Length: 226
Image (cartoon, rainbow, N blue to C red):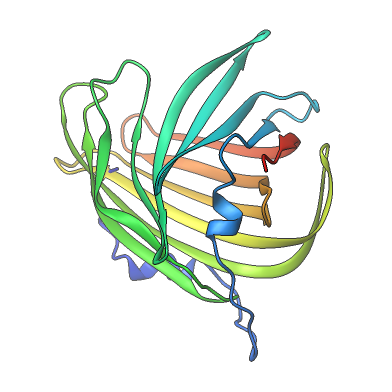
């Protein structure tokens, strides 16, 4: 989460989509977070084999999205996102990684309303505690989400999902103290009550060293708990 030299409004220009005259509202709680015990597994190198996955655990109004990386036959916990799900909508509260001394909280949490339609955007700016690696401090998190399209058919190794939401993200992060900053863009497709079925994105680090990576991730399996 790196301090941005660009105003947040510039991110909206990267999300180009025309809003329809009549638009249906969508509840992102039905697309981002699945029922407790549900999981999704993804292929990230186009060989049709699971490389990582997410399992959901509910704790009252809070939902833990537990991410696992596959190491041979074993699944190792890679990190946890902490969400709050209530009548007002959905909020990303913070995250935790194995070995970290505590939770990295977002202040304020990144919040999404309970109803969004195609073409609408959500913008955020938040500070995240940085406690995973010294020197400890805070990071800026600035971003934009937009529902870009609806009714999109997506085919993955897990099957064909005929009615997906296409959601675009732009995210910028920089240490409060300055230095290098990171910008990432994603176009993700979500199926209702199943979650993300495909992600295409890239991340660029501007600074020393400068880096760039791209990814395509597809759903290869899932389980929806009752």
